[in-house]
Image (cartoon, rainbow, N blue to C red; front, side, top):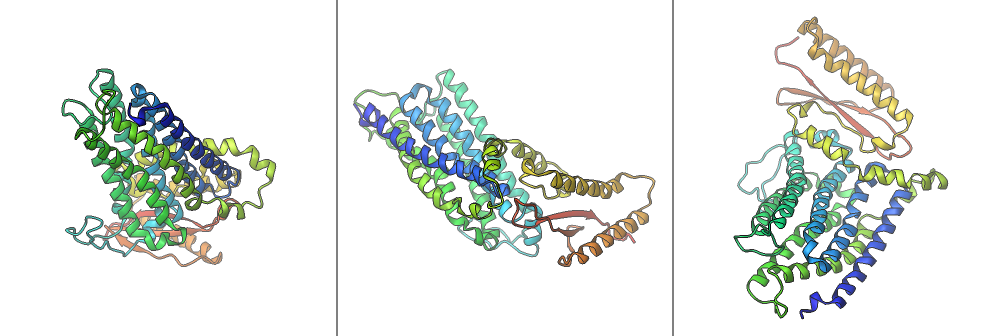
Length: 423
């Protein structure tokens, strides 16, 4: 009997999975306890959950091969969630989408072989570029669950077997589609990092990026390599196991072991120490009472749905920066955001008001913008800069907000359409 199918191997894999589970769950609890920067920790908690999901699903798949398609579906769906969370964490580090657009104004992409853009002409880092990066990640968030659903359906008809590369089975075609989708997602992360590497440098993103990429991308190629090795007959099949069973068993065992080391690396890459220093003002009892609510806020997929609608909408250029910790804001923050929304709505309503002439619209817009600029200068804010892109004037308005749980300023970017020739 092959050693990877024995009870002893399953028990050893369980030890590694249990250790990784304990290490990661303790780290997650610490982040939820010291919930001082929700705009960062929300995404960090999601990424950390990758370890227990991967380890536990792989351990169960190793024992119950006939039902492994269901466990793998859960693991694969969360895999897409992790990629989206990592990109969102990078945006949060930089202050949000609007702040990234402003920071990258005037920069151009430099073609490189590493990013597979050596044959592409230099292009500006603008809102179109950021939209492309997000779309490439979001498509994987929906294609991966779709392929998982297809595998379950094919499995029920006996047309799918994990690791079976036969052209008469569904695994080969699902693997090709998956590979193409995750390739786009990972390349978009690489393009985004190339554009913002200097801005992200204070947050040390290299180790974080390597961990996420290795766990998701390299784990896939590890499984493909094992499937090829099995198809070439290099695995001893003394028990006449089903096609793909041995390669899937090796893959699940290796993942259980690898997650233990990933959990240790997470302690370094996503350390809770910086958040402890900023949580001194939190009372112990209050923090303990919010652990469950913080967990619920961190795992809610609502932002994924909202982000998908916003990025694939034709009105994407009218969005403004949304706070990542909307579920943890206080009454004062909510009032401020409602005031900002009313302000933005009053500006946007000019586009839909037929009774106003074009010149009157422009005069009222300029008047409102001038009054805003004067008020911000009185509060010692930086001077706003105006930049033109594709016939659109971008007015970066810097709103200084410093609630207890934030350590950085949030930026709001309003896009005002000014047509050439208008007074």
